[in-house]
Image (tube, rainbow, N blue to C red; front, side, top):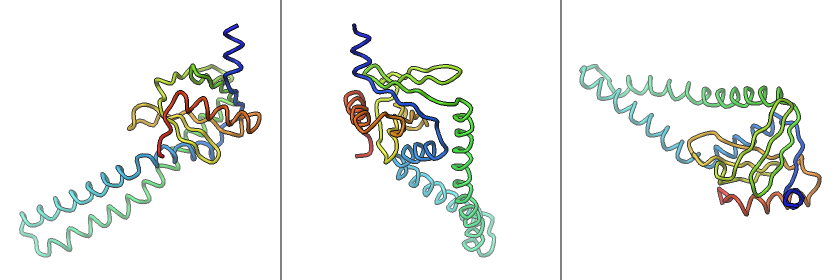
Length: 181
């Protein structure tokens, strides 16, 4: 009898992951830590610039400020596109892996998330994913470790209808904290 009650209290999503889903999930995850990452990157470039200036001053090289600015500027100009390329490569790699898994069935209940694919299944307890973010197209369950990339994406299009999306939101609200509010 508990099994029937569990089914009534759960929501099943059936979907095939897309690159768009994966990109949206990773962007939602990144948005939570964007300010911290920008501060770290800015501090890193400031330290590198300061170290280069000190090095030029210590070596008594003429025009130390202009000379130090050129390599720092070159690094910044190369670093920006490198970050963008790395993100696209990450989405492409994860998408390739997800496509190989085929259609996903995700059963979401108060016990956690169970994902079944053609060649296996996984159970993810709420203790591993205590936070979530809702985007226009997805619910993204987030791992406890804020520096890790642990996400479980739950596309709204996989639900049978708007009622299931609302029930899914209720399950998530009961078992996880909505992040980014």
